Image (cartoon, rainbow, N blue to C red):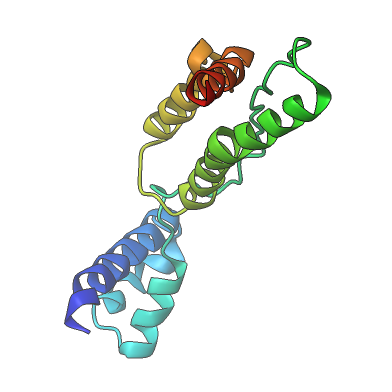
Length: 155
């Protein structure tokens, strides 16, 4: 209880202040403002319920990100390309998709400024668009180098 006391007190003060700000021009409510400071627990809970935290992002961002697929290598067989696709999916695509999903889910609970949230999203999407050649997936050279090493070892 003592760990959340500061947050509850903050929510109560902000809820009361938001109520006062909303009704500051109503002459009928001016008389009720003097009673607000001496509320019972039920009244305090009601003001905590009307508190709205504007530092948390409310809307759900309906965005998508495209993760570039590994290029098909015509020098390799279809089976080798499928195997490289599966390895690429396991090592590169799945971790990227997991990071994007976690970032999307947790973003609505983060207390950040709107500019900071927008900057982070922009940086993430820019990093997805500007992928180095080494990160685009497995190349045919890696597979052929592996075969060459196996042949050298066998001889």
